[in-house]
Image 1 (cartoon, one colour):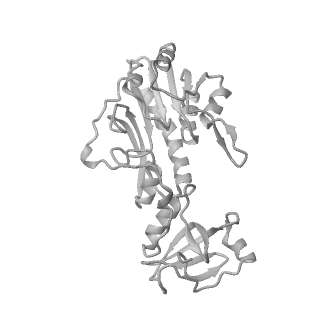
Image 2 (cartoon, rainbow, N blue to C red):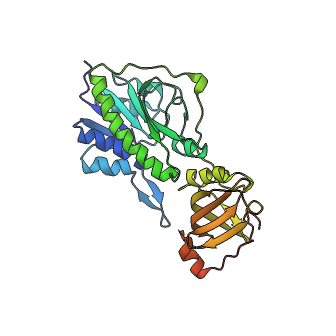
Image 3 (tube, rainbow, N blue to C red):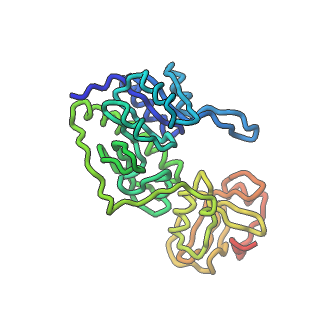
Length: 315
């Protein structure tokens, strides 16, 4: 039987909160939480604590926010807690082996994909962008490589046709917390054997780039739908309308062939704006035009006359 009395948790964004909450609800002894430093946010650039820090402080758990983790001082500080295990969920930094090997049971990670698929920083978004029908969570043993360590406990999760990176991320973070406490129980019972990843099936999930946002209406309706949903909430898929940028949201692929050239607005109604693509048509129910807030198309067309025949993507 493996003894897990003291756990140090490493995580930063909202995605990591369910992992910490699940362990607290499970009665785990979290002796410290490590997250990235507070950052300025919003128009006022006011310093904001990471979501994981907020939860940790609510439970009076010590919080460490080092600017640098590859220092002897930080290494020694972690040793003072005598942790049995590190648990990592979306901490946001690559951990050196010198830290990973501090606890006797090593370091386990809650990763947002079915490894070895989508190793890297944006697995949730990349699964939607690729048009996958499912993704999942993998509890894995961390090592020196980028998400290359042994698989401990995976679980699949379907991707709905209307899932965005935000909605899917919420489902996955919740699943991650549930799966994590199951893994801890199995680890204590020595029933969590590591399974080596097959590198032949590995794919990468690099961070999103702003230049991925531009919509090419020559692509299929399905591809563009995946782009819009995979880049929501950031960096948001973008096209042009009359010299202004326009961002469509809540896309729905329509049956049948397109009746006009790619990028042409073929219908405007309270239900949404229908645009022809390189293959099929796409209706989107929400919109944001440069200088305006995101809103339902039904509200947008009350104050803005949008005619059929206009072509998106041109200045």
